[in-house]
Picture (cartoon, rainbow, N blue to C red):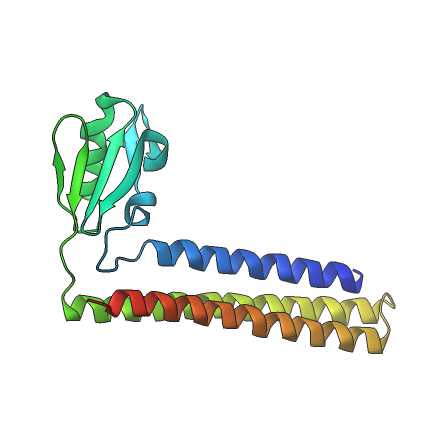
Length: 186
């Protein structure tokens, strides 16, 4: 592997780790209604589990309410069942055309649990990034052993990989801090 290939692979994988963290953080409740809360839900419709986004439009017209408008009114009961069965603790109200979900305010204890979960998710992302760094460093060592890279090139690659690691770990930390602030706001 050339130094460019090693760096490109490492950066691409670190970008994916940040993407996974971003999606996980979007699913964590804050005090406000957020369509991201129900994005990960799968609804048993048409004989297979289907993402809710493919069955309905999801919006948050008010800070304390999510509105789900099914494209096919026949799926409204399935969507309602999926919300009730999920571990989100939300109570959907079905009026036959759309589903409204009122988001109750979070207690301080629940907020603290959410912050703990955010920290866990951020740490998982950082561990993933560090594993990618380890893999890239191994690839650089292999390339040096097989004479594809000189010793200086290998060291330069390792330095650049370390810079990438710092940058992406910083992004993970920032994303987590931002989300923690949102969760702890009243």
